[in-house]
Image (cartoon, rainbow over the protein chains, first blue to last red):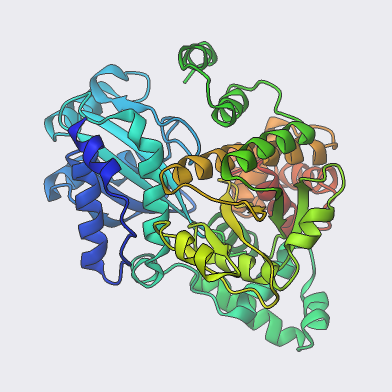
Length: 233
Length: 251
């Protein structure tokens, strides 16, 4: 509650996040203000078999990340408890969620000091990110400040495109490659795309091959799916 | 979360805020609001902002254009066209691709002074004089992009409630996206097998691999994929995957 009061007084015009350390400082402050102990900002890219987790920033101890494992963290971030902006964030209390977490996983999170977790979905422009806030004891984080916190994270990260791009390699495609992929996703054949863009069919094929490689996809369909999921097209 | 649990949650939380109720209702599978409802809800947000005009615009799939969805003249979209004039549409589209933060424009210095106290927001400079306005970028999990635009001579956003209003815009957009999805889904429903094949295709599997995984013959797997392509009114497999992802049939 004290944290909440302090937060309301603070109607400052927020500073720009210019570097990685600014990003870390922002999240450390926010974590402190809402009464949480830990934060983790992640991006998730979907692969053939599993979700590829990319940790952009976090103050979890190294052991916690290793022990919990990427699969569990990705599961928490994307799970049914993760709320979109405009929703009502619900906390996940490790010891009380047998349906969501296995007994061993719940125990692990408890030991590691993440007894209560809020998972928030973020939209930063067209990019999707996830943030986890956790506290060692259930009930320490005030759920009523979470909707505001969620948008605050979206706003702050929107100010740091260069920091994010470096961290996630978002949108690695060139304009031409993206254009080709878009037309293919609209059902156009190589020849049709060539006609639309006014280049030769070979050029179109080479653009698309590059795009497939850059997105580490195995064929056109997967490249399109990956691009749509990550908001590139 | 099972349905009864979700229902309990919905009942337990006291629904004062109309917009978040909508998202709750949608989350537990109750019928989503109609477009007329959505326009009405948007009007309440406009009232809280002191705005005279409002509009929800949707970005095209390649995010190059904004098309009006509804506005303060519902069911016509006259004021949206007016709001997007003066080059504001292009500015907003460019902004929404990169940033979730609200952006605003103002003609006179006093208003600009007042608006610049809004944390995290940025100013855009329209080519023509266009009064004052503020726009909130909104997104769904399925990658749709939209913009809520509010304008009018009396517009005066309160720095304290900006997050709250933006949250309501997000919830409303989610509801509108659901209405659009159900409306455009006139095709016969997909079978479980068809969805499965489509999902695997989107993950990069070839027909042969799908056949092996699902213990089908290659012909059957191909047959399923052809059916989905027809049902989605797509011209080929790539198109079908893209359409299914955008409609939210697969994720």
